Length: 266
Image 1 (cartoon, rainbow, N blue to C red):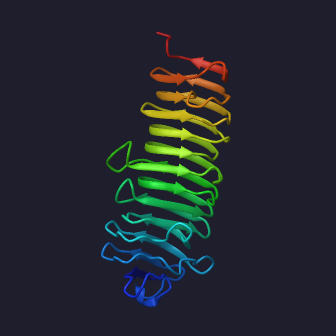
Image 2 (image 1 turned 135 degrees about the horizontal axis):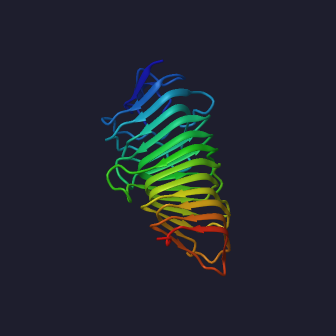
Image 3 (image 1 turned 45 degrees about the vertical axis):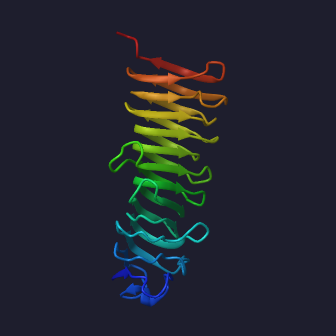
């Protein structure tokens, strides 16, 4: 294992030896894109089946782009940490264990795709998890300094199932299936036809449910669950309403099989 540092001294080609201190990264290397580098990485981007990095780290202050729409960096990496200011287009070749996005600004564009990702944490950036992405075991959406506006995340409807979501800030639009969502703060909009199977909602969270998929269990310990933003038929099998929670519905369109309302017991 060696550490290879991007300089971009020759051109923007990943495979050019002169662009790296230590030579082109190979499997089990740590690849670093430092803040002092200025050149974008835009050629030789398809490393699928060739390189499996231990880690890929893009430092804060690096303003170049890595990849572009239609030309992402395709590479296997066990861990990915992105803190840059330029665009980051990444497609993992095989399962990636850990992806962390703390972009320089909330407007920094990040696109993730490819195979299964075990864990994703997003604290800042405009992030798309595209339809090529496989299953995601764990997604954490939070914030760096601005709780509501630091993170804006979109998950394509054709992305794999998200097993566990923990949201403590930011705005998330999800079109794919979510097995369990823990919404503590921020805004979660569920779109499409697939469901959030279990919703655990807490004070400070705003959930806009625009999907026609059935929620099997929703426990509202605070915040607002809003079903009224679209005219679709919607259903919740079991709904718990605790004090300080708000539930918005249209009774002619929305069905709750079992409702336990504890808000006005005093």
